[in-house]
Length: 482
Image (cartoon, rainbow, N blue to C red):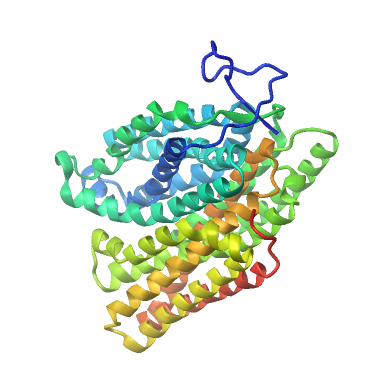
């Protein structure tokens, strides 16, 4: 169960509650939901908004290819690495408190990025910005899980899913627009500066968010934290550095280290929980059917999404010569379809239950199949209308699938462990998205060099159809979303 922080009339909003006070959470009002989703949106947008500004950054700060790679991947590294720990800290010290600290740190590090005098300074600021995002992001889903129920929770998670998908698309569009407009004559720095007023505004309203935390403060798990960190660092290094380094043999040895770390982590966490301790990753939480089966579907779903966006950008900018703004604008059908359908996802789920994920996989597969046919038969001048229809269908399918999987994964997680559950979910989502982009991008580049651009595109789309088929098969065994 959860309890509210600071309910006594004469105490500050973040004051610690008494040991006996256990009132229920008061729900998540419209403005409070907007506040937490704004912070989440900033973290998602900043994962992609910098991509279209890399040339300007290189010219201004004289950064080489390796440094520019770190500007992009460094954020993702510290972000993915800290999500589970951030969720655990929210359970222990209060989710609103951790969200506030994370948002304040994210706003400050965004300002540092915008003021960076050297490329080295920018890389360090981006690493810190990713760590700040890891502090705030798990609190969003955890707060929704702890403070809502029923239709209200379904609606909130639907909007969370829409924010996740739209943030990646909006990042590319907004980044291209800001660099093109050169607002205030500050060039690329505007892609970071825009976070500051938005972050400050959200911080001023953060007291509207209900303050929840675990009823019993979980203990610290130093060995589990170290083992989890080693495993994640090895996996992330392999995924991020592999394409640039050409996948040398020594890099693959990190996979062996990661496997050993994961095995040791599983054993350590089981033993700690059996002794009544507080593991970083509770085996009992990970064993819930909704969590286990939902994550099994979330991984291929997120991998296909990451690969789709990355390969689309390679084709749009590399083959057709679109700039960042035009490339992002081509994803407008996806963004519009996802947002509109996500608003109705709770009602559809209430009517057809878990079959909504099956329906989403079928629609998403239809979009991918249409794109493959258009690319294969219409190259080098594929029908723009049919391409946009295919992208729109992909968005409809993603809207039916993604938010429903979020609900399914967290449905059985106790509110007291909502932060940890959210951290596991978002970490899995981030890792799968990055892995999908790496696999899809590497496959496309390799095949385009050996065969042809259209053949490479069609084969990558066939791979994404395989991912979607896996989601469809798993959806037949999912519990009904609650």
